[in-house]
Length: 178
Image (cartoon, rainbow, N blue to C red; front, side):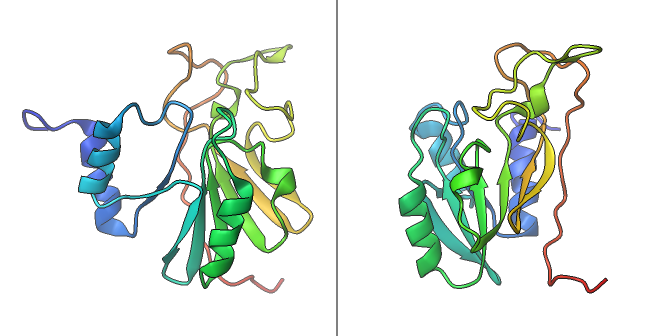
């Protein structure tokens, strides 16, 4: 890259060029109004306990449950006012048990899929009130799906062990007949 081009800014530019770009707050995701302004300048819409349309989807952005900034009621009310199939973005997977069936898919991160998983021991920490129940991957419960990704970064310690970073490509469409 050229001088002054940061990889994060380049990635944001690629994402916004491909599709509508929406962002839900995370526990350490934004530090100050400069970061929020940078997202806006890149064409990314911040969903802070709110919802927006993106094609045939109604996408809700739930603020961070880990830092107790989430308002599931307000986010669901905004989703219900927004036409389309309901999808929820949430930094933490912890609100998933309270998400109603009308929201078929929730995408989350926060746990970093445990970040450190030792052989014969398991996860050092899951960063979830639900232990390993929602730590990583695809979870199907009561007709709804939760996808929790490891993401690309780390939290607290700048290392991973036994847990690879990942980025998911989720294709959304009508249910296929089997």
